[in-house]
Amino acid sequence: LIIPAPPGFANNPSWPVLGQIVGDAYFGPLIRLNANANLFAGEGVAAGGVPGLLIIGLVWIVWLRVFDICSLGWNRIFVLLVTAPLSLLLTNTHLSTLLISFGGLFWMLLLYYHKPSALRDTAR
Image (cartoon, rainbow, N blue to C red):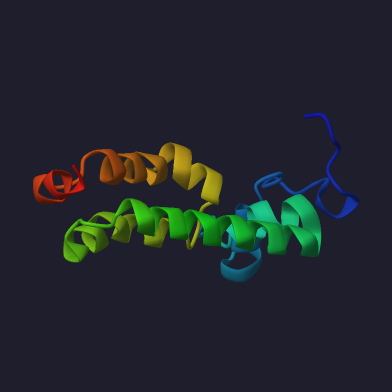
């Protein structure tokens, strides 16, 4: 609403949805696929160009490491099962959206603050 569309996209009905524009280009407008809206396309290149790729990559690495630390003490199969949807979402959504809307922060907090009782007892 504030910045006008680039001249190449001024008449594109999908503007400003970057994933929709990519989906239309690769799969045709009839499919209406929001493709390639992952963290590297949306929060990386679109937000900061090549430096944006490096920054979002580092943010992603930090989030994965913190998530791994939060899940210590939990059954790995359980952790893999509850995080499988998060992994799938990362292929076509932004990291910030995943953290806020799809449970990325929720699962981190739950895994960290509600450790299995055997682990809580040994920590005391």
